[in-house]
Image (cartoon, rainbow, N blue to C red; front, side, top):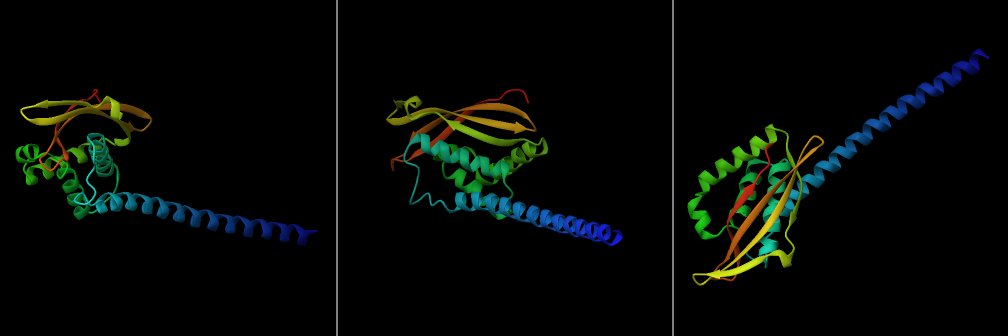
Length: 189
């Protein structure tokens, strides 16, 4: 009887040890697969060739802007990736906006803004770009313009905040829509 109890106890200890090792190995596999997904988001965004596949509509330009922004504010990346992501955003800007925001100053301000959000533990959980029917088109001084909204949802813990951005885009000589500017309506957070 004592031998039977000892055998059962020994089997239970072995089962617990094996279960513990299985649990630990699964955690490592899960975290490495989550890191791979994050890395692939950065890589996918960086691999988009804007010369060959520039977004064809104002809505798609703003959608790509939002995807890059979400990547910048949420993901982990190297300094080189940060500069390349920033350059992807910068390439969506109209020449006038780029002239008013020289690259060196733009990158510094972008880094400060991202650091501010991260220090306050905010992430961009989602975004919603206006539907194609909600894009307002107009002409002025021989240029075509488009105005549309993008609603970013920020998360801090369990709290959600919405930031409404109204974008103004201008069609360039090459037919590409470029971001001329935007206005934010931020709630107090």
